[in-house]
Length: 149
Image (cartoon, rainbow, N blue to C red):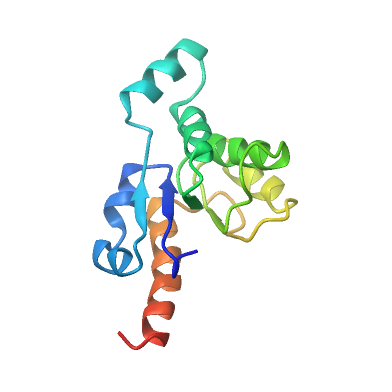
């Protein structure tokens, strides 16, 4: 997916800002986040759910989004799992699920392991946006190095 070009949904703007635009541009990959989008915020408030849930629902409808980076919100990872299991979205090419925190982070990672999707995670409650960025950069730089750029 990376070498063919795709959209990469990030559950935080911090992930978007941390990713190497230079390397992503070489592969025609576009990272984005919807958690600060006005429409997402309004709908989340109206429904009484998190912006992460609504953002994931919108991202899931975008056929160009093939990779999901979750570094903050366990609810985003739970919602992504639900969307995949209900066949409401295409199977992702990769999910990096490393939400951080005491409430739901560890559990969301564990339940995601039971789904047939390529994923990278870490055990426990640690993780975060910087970890998600580092994981994708590790993959990107391996591709970059192999191709001899």
